[in-house]
Image (cartoon, rainbow, N blue to C red; front, side, top):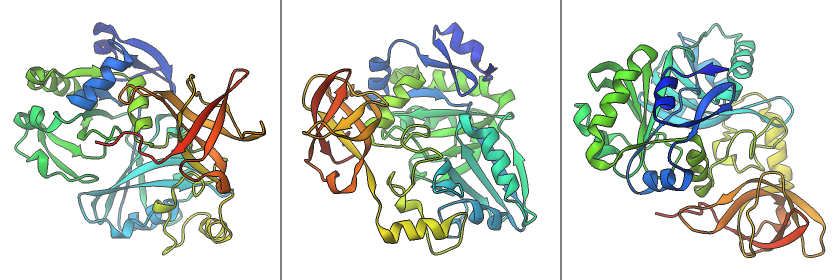
Length: 360
């Protein structure tokens, strides 16, 4: 079991540690609902150092990025990032990632922890364009400082005007006295904030300064359980749930980051799928009857026929109601359509709703 650099700090803080993607990770500290509320209304800090970080550089860096990515990296300017995915050759998704453009000859890719090895092998196998590929995952830690109070609580730690870092933008600057920290506004919670990419040897000092600076704003450490409830309230996909090697990215709602203005891995087949029309669609739903939907539960129609499966579900701490996402046939995916979720042996009423569930 791997450990993030700050593992001992999480244990000292009383975190419940669980195995996740091959790492021992803090799933919660004081409780999911309290931590969720801290991020929605104040400021909290996630240690997401289990995530992977790749660097693609050299004169031909853009060629490799464009080949493996569904999105069009040619539109990126220095200091901008984009959400995208790595298509496989069979219609599914190897991983969903974020690509950062540092400059014309340097790009960074942030990948999911469970897919680091697979992604590294895949991108390397596609590198027939002489780009320079490096896996920096073991050298960097990542802290996500999230919540509406993130900017004002952290502003004293840097000369950069944090409020000027727009969504999906980043800067490299001095933060908490540490040089060359990447400060990125690519959050996964829907409550604002930013992420810090820090060398492992510097992250303890940064963590301590962050909590000193945020003390007056009630800053708290936040675990992965609240990260999941926060992202689900936003209707954000999670790899392994909504997106898999077998799941169509178009059915999962990723058409907006699938750019057919260029060629990329499996682009011809994905284009044909789009033109033919997708068979299923990822939808959000909220429970009408009592019960909490969980991953893998069957979605059924009024006749009791199974029409799909729940990919994610929870009791929403912010909304006070049970919510979920899942795939259903496209002709049954309209907002307002009533469906049933098979919870154990009971078919419980639910209805399809528009995402995000949480609206500021």
